[in-house]
Length: 321
Ligand code: DGY
Image 1: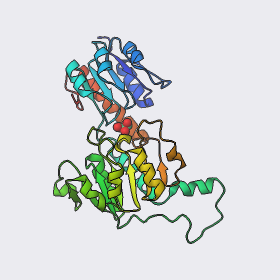
Image 2 (image 1 turned 90 degrees about the vertical axis):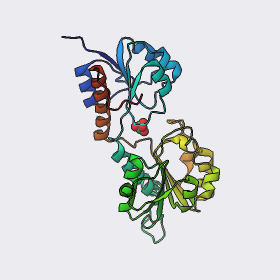
Image 3 (image 1 turned 60 degrees about the horizontal axis):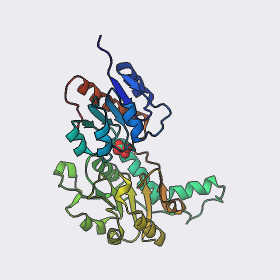
Image 4 (image 1 turned 120 degrees about the vertical axis):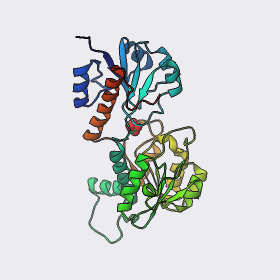
């Protein structure tokens, strides 16, 4: 029987994924979930045919060029792949796979949680209760913003953007979207298309960022674009922190230009600008968009499906390079 191929997992994996990986491969695991530096990854990848990484691991050109020649596949446990230099991977003959589709619903659910949490002042309300400051029901206490009938602008109408739109329609919201290309009428379902994202902003009572992190989307939400939003608009970001200029967003939340923000992602996470923590109108989550047991298992199994295909000399189903 042929010896099992060796695989490095840079971070701890869900138990069901670890079991399958360990059954089918010689797995170098990281049960303590310690963040590995580039030197440690290069050393641990010796003799490995594949590496499973997460979005927090940065595979830049320098690291990719140092990987042992045995490494044929880098399977990222994420749909986003901005942390991997795809051009460098291609030049090195390294296949890169990601985990699309399976996290669409979970991430769209969290987007609605952020939207509703920000609109209905959920954090302020929970804090009042937990801190023992609730003295009883009043007619005006903690009134937020109604979502039904409001306009939701979605930047990025890929799988997740469309799933957000489907959910928001259920709450009676009117959908606007900006996307590189216009959707088909079946996909659009009556949503209003804006070829120019800036043209969409004045129509957004709510704005949801669902675009990938690219040089074009870097700090998309800056002071100039916030000024285009209606006063009292609410911003939601479950995509990547790099889409937001924190300075501008914090200023707008402080001044009242924006009523609230629901944020699941932050530039430079897990560090975040400490001023966010002081803002009563920030509903903040620690990047849990895809964090359901079912979704994380499915993401891991997609990584393993790509490993299996590449190990068998077949094209990986989700290979990007
Ligand atoms: C993804 O899959 O890209 C999630 O944001 C986790 O990194």
